[in-house]
Image (tube, rainbow, N blue to C red; front, side):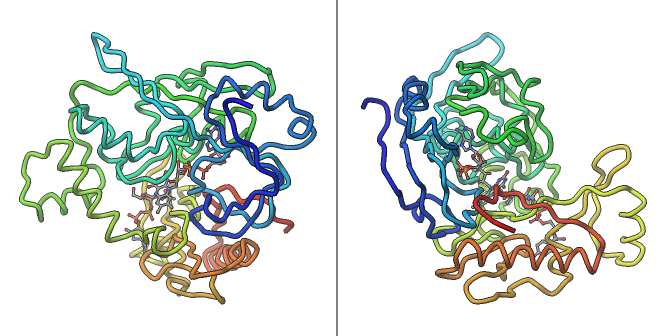
Length: 343
Ligand code: FAD
Ligand code: EPU
């Protein structure tokens, strides 16, 4: 059949950056999005659930997946030169980091703070990827998707996507929308975003006083290389928990007790805490139970030292959640999608 490749009882170990050895009942590698309606109508697929997968850098397979996994492998970038700003329509299966580097190489500013984030372009709107003071929502003009509920291809505007911190319409209704392409509007000119203090320090070290986007990208690459473990070396999914938003009064009370605890403004009534700090303060940085553990480089990163199962990784993550809950009264919510768990 054209447009996709179907495999039964497919291994997922090479398709998730935590390197969990799980299997999918069926796996369809999608090469052409127009094949989606036909594929989804096939009895073996229509009878069960679906799970959309990019590079698997934000999922934890806590068990096998009793569903058809739709792995997005579509490619291509189209450019529309607009009087105001270049618009780029990118296929869902393109690698995000390749696209960032491609845009910078063509002299388009905007995505420099978001360099080196693993994953596909199609997944970028799902949790509204963000790093170093910038979120992708700022550049998303339109998301194209197959809406499984409507049984139709749809185009969603930025407002439709309801983006928030590590949040969107897509995250709240998993697998309803199969994102097939994203159109980005990049500014012709843009003041550098240096709101994350570490970027300024890094630029100073580099001897750059007036940074161009490429310098910021270089500073971010240095920061990320130093701070975050590389999934090619040790299995991980980046931050395992979101930074929690709590009522301002609770944040103030905690900070009075722990003056060195970082607190950032989040909204009129809420403050954002640092999940990494809370986990570190529980003494869990570098802790492990068999092959499941917390990175010794960054306390917010759950790591697979070797052959930890998804269930073992999930059990360890829950242990971390409990420790932070008991010590600080703060509930940590996983950032990656946890699939196939029973508790
Ligand atoms: P997957 O992990 O395959 O999927 C993630 C979610 O998106 C799942 O719910 C999946 O069902 C859904 N999905 C994927 N593709 C589609 C599609 N085409 N249509 C509909 N749904 C889809 N994230 C950040 O925001 N900021 C960071 O700084 C950051 N740093 C990271 C560093 C490391 C080392 C790692 C391993 C991860 C990091 N992440 C970060 C998380 C991850 O890179 C992003 O969430 C990324 O967007 C996931 O892309 P993916 O293709 O791997 O998605
Ligand atoms: N910290 C510790 N111990 C640690 C690590 C961090 O105490 O081991 C404290 C420090 O006080 C540090 C603070 O946590 O200043 C914040 O750490 P960092 O700057 O590394 O950022 P983060 O809040 O842990 C968030 C995102 C990252 C993103 C970075 C940079 C979330 C859940 N995570 O991490 O995104 O790259 O900021 O902007 O919002 C991801 O989502 O997977 C991800 C890696």
